[in-house]
Image 1 (cartoon, rainbow, N blue to C red):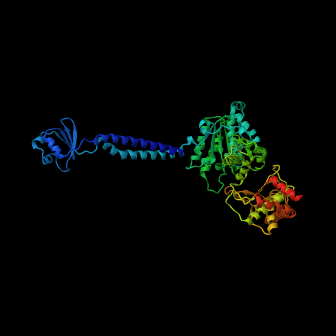
Image 2: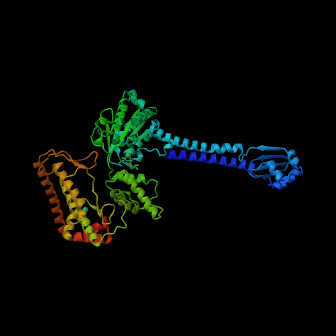
Image 3: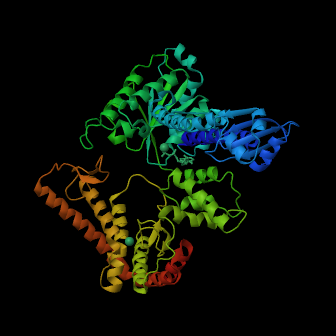
Length: 612
Ligand code: ADP
Ligand code: MG
Ligand code: ZN
């Protein structure tokens, strides 16, 4: 697009220049032929003929140009039809005197020859220019699509890349992943050392992890650490316009890379091309298959001394074609986790490196409040904080800016003009208070960090709990507690209003999902340690679809019974607890209605007061 506008503006420039030249030429010629000498009447001309003052006369159409003997000039006009000699006679010139005149008859010619030529050629030139520019653009477009040599692979580290060179220091956490990549860095730094000993370096490394966990960042950092060229291309960029372009691009990308060894090729979003072939839905995508095959054959074609490492990333390793993962291809897999608290703290430091911070900023607290945030979310958060501070015309970013941005990143911008009725507010307050109270009185549940009934994004209110220690395995009792907390909102509504609103949909859905997992996958129910097949996300539809049932109808109904008994258990737990802590529930709900949000310290104070 940029290129097109560039050529267009260049063409416009040429046009302008061209016109300027034409106009000046016009001016010069016009001034020459139109700046006429004094015009005299025919009567006067006749008199002057009789006086023999005239040296020469040129008749051109209606125009009579007169050159006097004293070299001065004049013009006169005659009738279109009238001939020169008779009309002079009519005006009283003597015939003998007329015959003495030296008269030239020229054909009528208003424009000088040069001008005529220009006028005739002008449209031709004009059309020529238009055609040329149109063709140029069309050709440019086609060339862009067909020009594999500029396969859009970006060479990071080049001067015109514009991006800073980054190293592992710019990547917070991910220590194990870095450790694994260090081997590759060492190889790329000094390939001969390894090749001499006959070592074969991994050809392909697959980086997997949730979106925003730093796959791209880590790949770039690897190139930065090794100071080698970095060819970056996104899987989705392969699939474009014409069939055959993708595989052509791959071929060219690898050829390019071969001329710049040692180097790294980075294929982002590998799943865009590397999905399992022939998976049905979406029609047989020949193009994708060809591209994928080309990648595979390029990687197979690596010699023992090829100094190219292919990094690829995906957040859907489960959908990749198994051929990609075979030995000699992407046989190394590095899993990038979401950052833990400490890593988030480091990320905050990295991302606010260039920001002026006020002394009260405590990244530990911010990190504590942002579980589940990815690296990209943290980067977004620091940016939001800076924007908040700038909007308040502060010169430094303070802790409150960071804290305010958390919810913005988490739930989207505050819905300021969304007003809820008093009743609605009351229900929401009891609902959220219910979650919170259940959470703080269950031994297994997580502490409450913030409760709010300010609606943001899609949710009406929210309660933020934070696991005190981030653990990967969960015990059954923890699941039950978590389900009880989820049921807390529902039960509080039931307790306070004797009826239930639709606000609990999400909670019920999540609780049911938990329960189903407990029974079917974790073997935590009376059905025993049997895995009944989980609900897998559908490859193409991107949503849950029950996997093929590998159990009988009888078992199915048993599962349903178990699931509902788990939910009932959680409900009962929440009910009992809320009844016992009704005072706390009322206090928290009332406080919420008044203040809309409650922070952790305040919340703990409220609860303490009630339980004393
Ligand atoms: P992915 O490719 O996994 O989707 P990116 O590598 O594009 O994610 O990460 C997006 C942004 O998030 C990065 O540009 C960086 O600012 C930030 N980020 C992600 N992970 C980290 C990390 N470990 N340390 C520092 N910043 C990170
Ligand atoms: Mg990425
Ligand atoms: Zn809820």
